[in-house]
Image 1: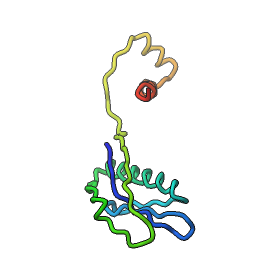
Image 2 (image 1 turned 180 degrees about the vertical axis):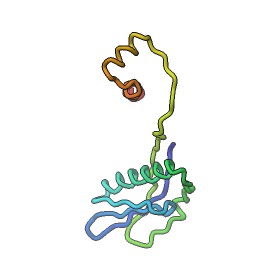
Image 3 (image 1 turned 90 degrees about the horizontal axis):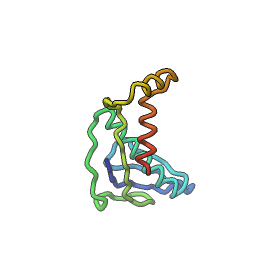
Image 4 (image 1 turned 120 degrees about the vertical axis):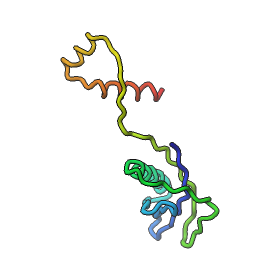
Length: 124
């Protein structure tokens, strides 16, 4: 799922930035410089949304960027987060008996092998 929220980047005296999301209470981050602040804003947004998804908490709608006022030295920018649902799901798979026997002998986790293989294939 993709999310886009306006973030307020407050410039600090030491060149760092404090990042807040007016629509997301408690979603705060900080960056050592502008490039780091942009990265930290995305990371903070992703973590905030993942936590709220896991806890089944409401995720508010994003405000229009033009409605966010800047009262301090800084600026407002849109931040995008691509959040994947990581909860486990059960699937039934079939494989030859000899393969299942061999995997059991070696103590191999079929779930881990399937996840690793799918991750590799889906990145291509």
